[in-house]
Length: 350
Image (cartoon, one colour):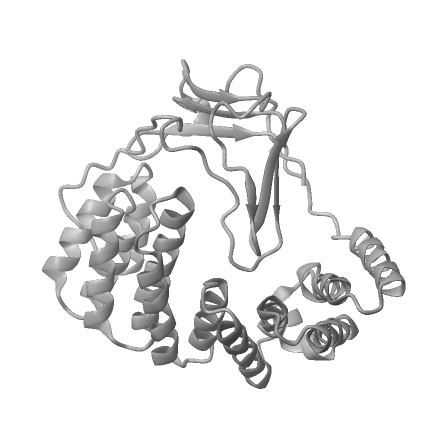
């Protein structure tokens, strides 16, 4: 986020805002990644027994093999044949041979294996996550990785065991990070119940999410869909009406309901007004990042992100499969009535 973040009410952008003009996406060059790989190779040349140098280069090779691919789905299917993927696994295997008690290196290699969609390679990911947990059971990111892969493998009971561990470990964390992670865990757990056909358990799980995060209508919608599909139309209608009342884009909710074959009577159909249709916006929040007076998250969360503020720029760095990038201090965040329309503008450099 470079130099500017503005939240404003109403529908008209602030006078200083530059209109966004979409342009066709350019090919994603990997020149920077190749330069980083070369630098990591120099590190290995200078320090041939540095497990860290191998681990860093391995992650860069993995990035080159899949993250920069224009078609990630196809890349996941064929990644085991990609020379960069092969090099990535070789580097992490070398790092593990140098430091065989490093939970972090097993976790990283597990992430690389998890980049594939092939069952046999995903099983290797589970094995590495399990080894990481054995070496360091206090690091929860390996539990997250293992649960995600087991869910993809349709090993739902195994995934649910890890989600329960994550729920238990996260229960007392009241920080913004903890709250966001808890919401992610609860949704992943509820959707695993859906995937496994355990409808009653899924409904109970979505009910728990709705109680914990009452301003998030997603759990109500997903619970309503389950009620609808199971024939409990009264309960479904109750949830759908709540979602409709909470939404600032009622037309979209009505369209989604129509897609389910649901028509609710007596709804207020006031939909979101196009941005250009009204005037008189009022700025609720503005930040040019001269300092961190507004309490943006900064610091290093290992394996997830590094955030900092310097020279009028909020820098967000992340390279993890599971990560939340940034948030405001709850006490200083702008007070926005989410049942009404508002505009968010930001200048970004990627």
